[in-house]
Image: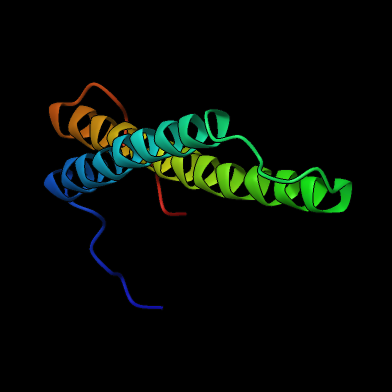
Length: 99
């Protein structure tokens, strides 16, 4: 197995910023979608259509919230890795042995 160089500190923080930015954009999108759905009444009284519409609205908001959560957690993980690498460089944290 070849030794590949590990991630660099700037890569961790840059990736965390990009992921955090996407997370904030998805947060705004999720709020906008939820606000639009909450203030747009259904134009039918057919219960089958109402139930399908509710299910689709829940699916759309849930998918957006899932993307928000994934990008947010990735951002936190990348920032944490960057802090760990910075601490190892400064001698605050011990380096792990590959053995």
